Length: 485
Image (tube, rainbow, N blue to C red; front, side):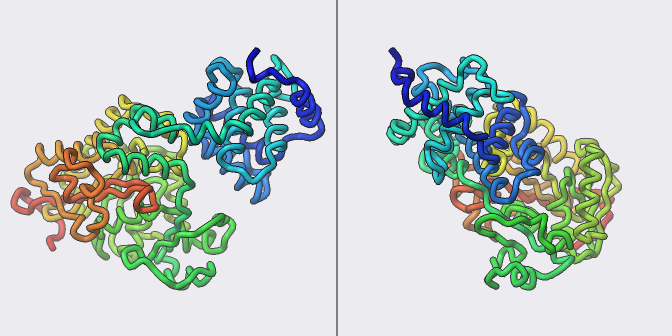
């Protein structure tokens, strides 16, 4: 007989205990969200926002940890379920599998709650809607989680990461992604990146200098005065912070933004009075940062295809007081009028998001190599569109929040080969610690990687971003126009 069902008495006691109370609110919310994510394809952050509205701040924070952690660790959790339940997870009913994943994550990774409470709630959640026992999967959940509380830590400790296949299981990443990073970054950096991806993302905000100054806002939030000289507008907080409930947020003095995303606008370095194009501008973090760096003078043309996202962008622009921003609803891939020239252009296209797996945990399970290649084709079209309207001598920054050669350095290499009128600027001279080639194995380095930037969550404590800067050579533009510098 299977070790999973050998003993009945403890199981029956746990089942009686489970009937005594409803699951804790955070676990109940997390299970509902995870069912939406795993069984219906919902995005974790959106589903959590929809389900967590009635929770207090403490339960909302716990529900978020449970949801994000369970989604992040899904690969490892399923490996453990197969070992402990002695059957593949895909053979289990959806609500039973979700209860097992959630319970295993809390038992083995989160801690803090008594094991008996975690097991009891998972058993109740596994009964399905309205507490019906259904096919009896709740008894399996009880047995597996009780066994996991005894054997799980040793099973986790026994996982190895000597090659990409082992690392994919141990650090819960798709096998194709682990193999790609192993080749591009080398084993040590690939391991470190995968480990970092399973940690919470940095809690970072940008001080909106159109509404206030960094020192005053830091003082208002009770933070020490020390500032990052390269990103004086950045604030990184430890622990929870209810930004949307703060006066600083309501009055537009702060906006949520990673330090890597702030670096993009700093790399473009727009000047007051210039004309700047921002393609794929919603939700507006970089758009409004550009406006702030320009001190509200000049013009930022922000392009967004989606009507709903353009409306959201306009609300953000209004809240932050970025009066020099004009929002255009248009497809960033479309060719713009060649005579409509800009001093600076930001091309920050939709991408695979593989540098943001801390804050978007389900992206790792959604993305495929085929999808990456499809996105790169759209990115190349957007780069062409932006480059077409850059004035001679102007600066274009191309950025993504991914760690994907297809979307990053290879795309820039192809563009430069087809456009001799552009040259690659050396961003690494200004940010030597973030030079891309410092992160790559020697065989993967290129002329682009020597001059571009790449931030890594594991090394830099912020999202993973690729940033390259191009300049259009004045000599190659006939009938130029715009402002020379």
